[in-house]
Each structure stands twice: as structure tokens, then as C-alpha cells.
Length: 173
View (tube, rainbow, N blue to C red):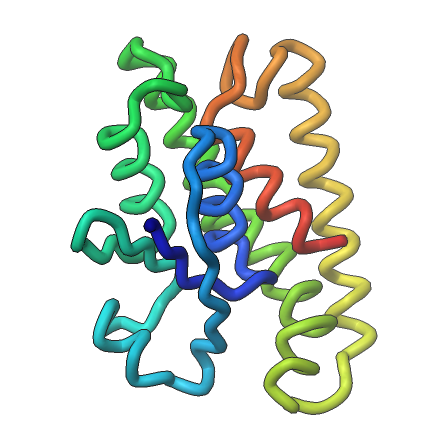
């Protein structure tokens, strides 16, 4: 049985869960708290990051490798387009969420509202929350513009770009 080591409020973990579900794959969940540096997690991924997917005796660590593995190992429900240009657009948007959105929205909202509480790091900073919300508005305008022209974030069909986007957006809720 596949096992996904995750933290429920980690966008990468959410993306892996969404992708497993979209592909119709059964899996068990193992909740982790990486800030506690659990030894079993570090045996699977020496960097200590999430998600980690255990499947067929392998441990695949971090969001992108997990998603790529799922696409390669279980191609029946494709989440990447076939064309090189279309695939590049999916990757661009995944990177946009991982770097730009995460740094400008999650770094403020997720950290202040959830991570601080979970890790006992003190009270949220109201200014940081306001800044994160301001950044979120800009990002939502950008996404709205994309969706005005396309059925999915990266083009005419549902892809990993939509999954990664949904994973990040759902953490800001």
C-alpha cells in the first residue's frame, strides 16, 4: 500500500494528496511535524522535507519528484499535457506557486496564522497578515486573468498546475 508522509497544511503535501486522488490511487496517510525533526522522516528524506511518498519499496521526497513519479508510474490519468510548450507552461505555473505565491502569500498568511500556532512561536503579527492579504489580492487578479482566457490554469485541461494552485490557495483559507 502506498503511504504518504505529509503535514495537512503544507501546500506540497496537499498537492501530492490531490494528485493521488485525481489518479484514483489508494494510499495511507502518515501525518508528520517536520519542525520536530522526527528520525523516521529523516531516514526517508535526509532533508526532512515533505511530502514523502513510499511506493513499491521506494521513498520519493518533495512535491515535484512525487508528482513526476506519479505521472511516470501511473500514466492512466494524465496530469501533464503531451506537447513541450504546454508542459513548459504547467512547469512555469508550478514554479510560480512554489516561489512567488509561496514567498508573497504563504510566507505571511500560512506562517502567521498556522505555523506559529502549531510550533508555539508566539502571536501572529497583524501587519504581516495585512501584507499577505494585499499580496493575495494581486495573485488572485493574475489567476483570474489566466482563467478568463483558459479552462485550466495552464491551458484547456486540468493539469498539475491546477493541483499545485489549489493546494497553495487552500492553505490561505
